[in-house]
Length: 93
Image (cartoon, rainbow, N blue to C red; front, side, top):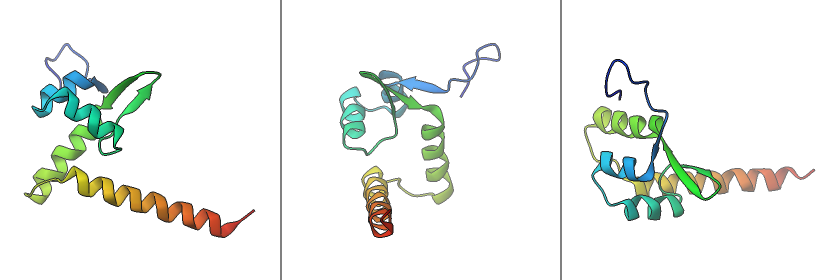
């Protein structure tokens, strides 16, 4: 995802940059981040989107040949986290 041979590859995108890449509204990205439905790193009051996350989404879509449903990814992630919490509670001290 480099713009030129001289420019280094970006590791993170701002939310407006990610929105532009994905051709969605900035508010859509912020809402998805707050709903834990879109990968982001929070730096104090600012969010940045890992370039690798966008690349993985693209690779997943290309590999499957289908539609990537972020809501479904979020549901699975939440279920996995809940399962891990349950496992940790069962272990005790």
